[in-house]
Length: 220
Length: 275
Image (cartoon, rainbow over all chains, first blue to last red; front, side, top):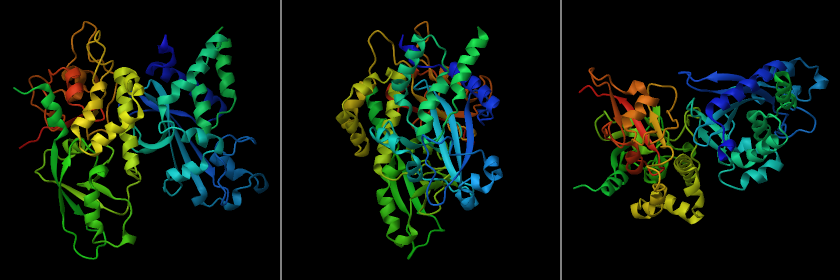
């Protein structure tokens, strides 16, 4: 039944709860934010990245591990270990905010994000594009509805950048079908975020994938 | 006797008399006269204000001009909301004309989306239409259309061509003969009293027993605070296109006849005026 490609809102919230549970275990800073009337909410993560002098640390898949560090760690490392400390004036630090919301129209999760300097100046769409890895740019530019646009956050009412959700099912269906075939439980949010996140600088440690199968083993 | 089709024309051709005044903080080389314009309720501010922009830019220096934005009584106006929605929500209880202030500097980054070009408006408009069809028809109707049909919808709106627009849009208002309506109704409910910009939920036009859901049914389910107590005073107005439809109106009918060109019902809940 085609309904399997889509997830209902309650299912979305359950997957988010599991995701956040693992996030807490590994010190990744995802949290759930309920809306004011508490009828719904979203997952949120904030991380800071230091602009490396005049060259932006590349967002997207990094072959050398994480290019971004939790704020506290970045300033505690000895100078040799952190190539960017010499240019770490406040204006060079960028705050990235990622929100995972549920779209009832498309019945899929949607990734909203925004970035600003510490003084509040927002990054422009041009700045954001400059940070997208080359390998993702071509794919994103292929269709008007596969791209990054500025939109109003449906719960906060503020401008955010969004990866358009209408093609989500195209790439999620094979993932879900395959997991059914090998009889493995998959956290939809983990799979989805591992696909869309890297495009906009959000990487997931591998332990998230192992977490789901771990839970499955514990249950059995 | 008014035909249902006449309602479509009345909605499309609705206008709001507006007076645009340049913000006093803007630097001008000579005095800027206010500019009067009838705004189409169903369109978008940045799509219909080229003349306003030109008028004020004539008295300003190029270096003092950056992205235009509009404000009403201190509230930045979201260009991506239809004009009629903005008016009903923010100014319908005030006397006409609608007094809008024009700005060319200090763009409020935290409140407004940028509108870099007409293409941005088209992208936004088509995105809304696509979302509405996802709700009504699981995107089947809009995805079956050719690119030229999508273009025709946009050109119809941009050039104020009712027939051109509806030649295509009528396909989006169809539904299978065996059903009694759309799968879900595309709607958004706006109130200025909440932080949340709007309420949007899945809601079917037909109940399990086959009865058509009404506007009142929708409000009771997704926004119960909007419904006034039966014996109490009327606290709120439920407004679409400047009118208050009866709460007994079937939602399916409202969706087919009172939607905006983006195929959404944009509903304002505003306090009952006390005059």
